[in-house]
Length: 367
Image (cartoon, rainbow, N blue to C red; front, side, top):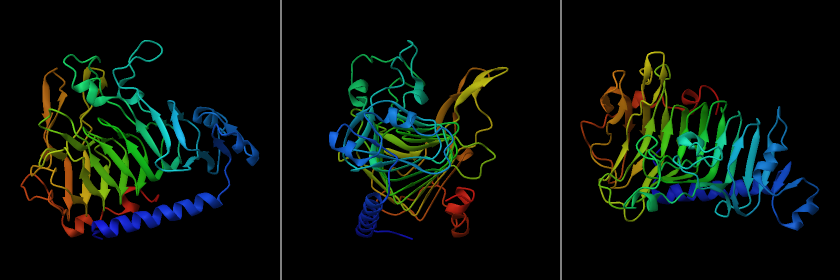
């Protein structure tokens, strides 16, 4: 189904209104709020999201609904209980935020690293979130425009700032009507199956990445401006295992940009063969065969004609080599808009091939 912008926005608004109605009707198990009036509701009230999750049952078998009041909840959160569901009072004003970058030090003096820096980390199944914002508020632009960087390099640099990570243990993660904001490495979908609907995902470099089976549909994907950079960014960076048929799939999405982002300056993505430790050394995992697809997506003119770009990784002999996009599984189908350019490097699926990208197939029967 192809959606023009007017239809896309109408559907998003109708869906948001329905979400609000459901939220008014449902009962909550806990509230995150500092408003004294919320203590009259007869529901446990917590002054932080960390405390609310700590109080959730460790072996829940039903959704544990936590209402997140308006406010900026500046805390680093790990969801390690199953069936946690976060429901914000206001998508724009119920904000889960932290400002750790990969190169920042943890309390023990070591650096967070890319995975550890995430504002919200999910390590349990059946997580859900709706009607709120998840952000990493680290000053990425300030860091990359300094004459001398302040952060040690982690990978290419230490300025990665993950907003949301789906880590080992996560599966069947569902997010609807959520704004996910960051810059480099915003959304790390590294484990399990996940579905994002009617969300806005904002970032610049590899800002949707990881090894999980992820379906992103009817979402706004916004590329952010990086001052002084010819290559403004990459939308996806999948690291899919070779045995998995699907990786990161965007369906019926709109690829937009901040006003300053130039035409033809953003790649659809690049394949990520991340390094890990083996018995004979530390090098790019040969069992990775990156997979991503853009199905029925509208693209603004910031998407360049080449579409995909190579990504470097360490080989077994220690040399730096590049993962060529043509050696990965990177495709699109029925792209439209000024960024939907024709190119030999942008492989297009047939209709029959595109029909395989159903929610049931991508998510292995869970939807």
